[in-house]
Structures are given as structure tokens and as C-alpha cells.
Length: 365
Picture 1: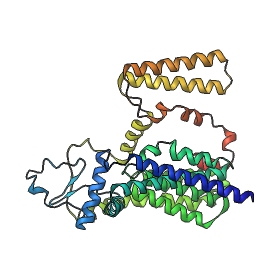
Picture 2: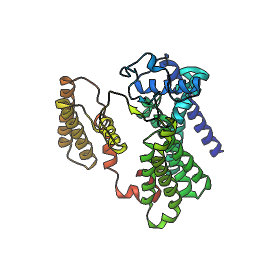
Picture 3: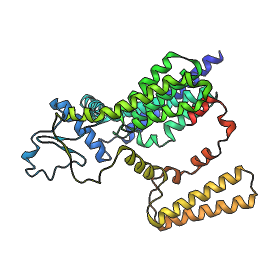
Picture 4: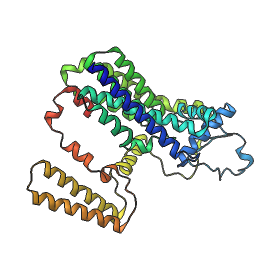
């Protein structure tokens, strides 16, 4: 009876979260897109769906000098233009969904991927600590950055879903030796690799994480490391060949404006700086970082039992600096840890006793 009641509780929360996400799509979807990246994906999907070819022919008829093609980051071949020549599965899926139900259906499927991501994370959390799963379900579904990025047509929801499925599979294999766990690892890593370039780094990270379980479980963890690591390396090495095949053997050149050559790792480091630790440029950025550090010091000192007057003083200083930052420049802060330093505080407060269980170490890494 208790187990049936628990299943019904999970069912109710799952339905409520799904209804909420569908409501968000209905409320916000007006047929418009928010970024040029979305436009590239949608247009590439439509080109393939309508012509059966990857490239766009006939552009030279309206751009004789090949100087004013109106899509940033497109690639110019000898006879055609190519919008997206990497992660081809995603624009193919977007084009098919767009033709079937328009942009609304495309975004709705992304919302479904967000829901599945939250569900997988919740199941892992519930396995680690009973009673925690439903909090994680809503935390990932509506209180994480994925809630804002998951509705964009840029595959964030699918890349994250892939790694959530892989994490769930890793847990099932390491803790219960369930063969279906390895199947989930394979499916999840493949999904992340095929939909996002960062999937290569995520797969390598998973392979490295399972090494943290300790010598006692290395033999059991080896299949997960092999699947994640080998798949990531293979996709990284085969990527250029796939791109060449899509371009039909044409020599392609990136269309201006360009921002210099950048490797996969360098571009990810730059993105990490902009979206995780950036508080802005110049004086506003310095003030935002200082406010975050003061808040961090306030939080940690409170948890470590510092004198109340010290905690209040540091906390007041953090509030004052944050207020000054917005008086100087009242704009958005893109860095997640600067905008919400309590996340970093939580990581810093994790002690050895929290990672005593080898499976918790895997999830932590």
C-alpha cells in the first residue's frame, strides 16, 4: 500500500510538472524565435525537408559577389551555402517537426526533453536519498538554468537529457549491476554526442567521474568508462569526415563575420567564463564579483559558526556592494555563480563524510 501511494505521488508530481511546462509553451510561444542560432537550425531543417539536400543552391543569383549572405556562421562552398554542417541529426529532427506541426511543436518537444531530464535527475536523487527526488524534479524542471534554455531551438534540452539518462544508467549499473544501466549509458552518451558539440566533453567527463569510485569498484566501472570515453573520442575524430560528407566534398569557408580560429576546448572555456563566472565588464564586473565573494564569505562563516556580528557585517557589505553594482550599471549578470553564489557555497561545504559512499562520489564529480 505504501509503495502504491508513493508511486501515485510521483505520478501526480510528474503530471503537474508536465502540465506546467506545456502551459509555459502555450503562454510564451508566439511563432517568433529569440536568437540567430535558432534561425540557423530552423532554416537548415527546412532546407533539408523541402529540397532533400543539405546545401542551398541558387544563392549566387541574389548575391553575385558572395559578400552579403544574410546568415551569420554559414559556410560557403564552391557552389552552395551550408547553414549547419555539424550535429546533423538535430536540424533534421527540427525540420521534420517544423513541417509536421510548426514551431510550436518544435518547442513542445524541447519541453518534453526538459521534463524527461528532470525525471531522470529525480530518480537518481531518490535512489541516493529517499524523499529527495521530488524536490530535485521541481528544482531541475523549473528552478534551474535549463528552464530558461530548454525552450530554445538550440538543443540544450536534448544534450542535457542525454547526460541525465547516462547518469541514471551509471547509477543502475554501479549500484545494482543492472544490464539495462549500460544500455541507458550508451543511449544517453549517444544522445548528448549527436545533439551537442559539448557532448564530447560531457562523455569524457563521465568516463573520468567513474574512476572516482575507488579501486574496489574499478572493474565494475570499467564498462561505463569505456562506453563514454570511446564514444566521445570516436565522435570527435569522425566529426570532420561527417562534415565533409554533408558538404558533398566541397571546400567550405566560414562566412564573415568571424571571431578568429577557436578549438572546441577554447570555445567551451570562453562559454564557461561568459555563462558561469562573468559578472560583466569593467567596474560593474568587479563589483558583481566582489558582492558574490562577500556573500560566499558570509554564508560559509555562518555555517562554520562565526560570531553573529561578523556574519552580519560581511552580509551587509555584500548587499551594499551588490546595490552599488546595479546603481553603476543596472543590467543582467550572465554568470550563474556570480548571480547565485549560494550554488558555489553548497559545493564548498561538501565534506569528506558526504562523499564516503562511492556512488555519491560519481554523482558529485
